[in-house]
Image (cartoon, rainbow, N blue to C red; front, side, top):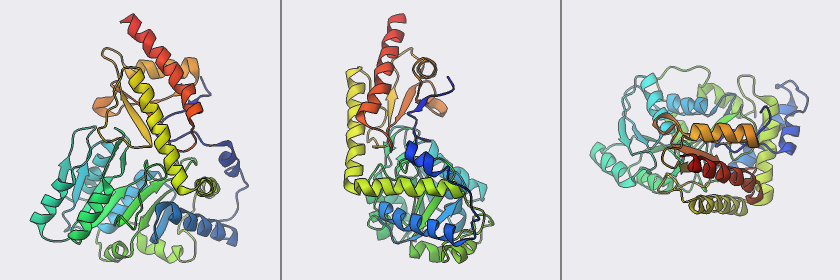
Length: 362
């Protein structure tokens, strides 16, 4: 089936009104028109992030913004902490290794969240400021980390907290400044409801000062270059112009709804999906789940790959498979952004039907 509805944890199903925004004519990005567009987008995004920090936009996926954070906050002599509870936490480790940085690694089993006390134990032993990399919402498992606690610990030890918030921003409450997050990473294609193509980092003043002493090699993601353009509401390289229209509209939709109501809506959708899963006599994977997605464990002897393929072909519904060792063992259901309980029913009803058919065949 060429046409289907996305219920994946990114990209998500983009509202028609936002897609319409992205179809506006291209214009030259050095004109005042783009300066105004970027400036308004940044100011509105700060409200969603609860942040007063500098926002740097990139024409890249979320991984590009993660690399920007890593290559600017670290120096070759640093020994950061990488806290992992899934595939995207592992990406921080891969980025550190790409720059020949050897971090201290804290790793939890897939489905579990990072234990803050483990981080504190390491910081006590280090007895000097360091950088902590982790995720807000682990997209591979649906687990939500206690970023508030990690922020308090980082502040207590004068360290720097860098958070991959790509899947969580807009779905899981995460006030950057109040929770002492020094760099928060995000992207356009998740709960911000726009197409892929833009990522960003929101950087605190103290983190930005630290970037000035970094000795790691970089060019495209060099914040020293970006800052000269940011103060003029510009980017040093050609931006994803039309995606900015969509991102601005997606953020405006969230603000028009109201931030509290937006987060409450995500909480209600997440609860509804999990209650439906319980009625199917199935379990969810994470102990502390995010409001952005639900990772559902498959019944014994049923491969999620088969179920996902059948739902796409017969019902025009696309869920996401597990990643790595979880492939075939879970289904990941995205419910961030442009969804409602009525819309989720259109996906969950055929899912339940296919699972019942599969069970009868076994």
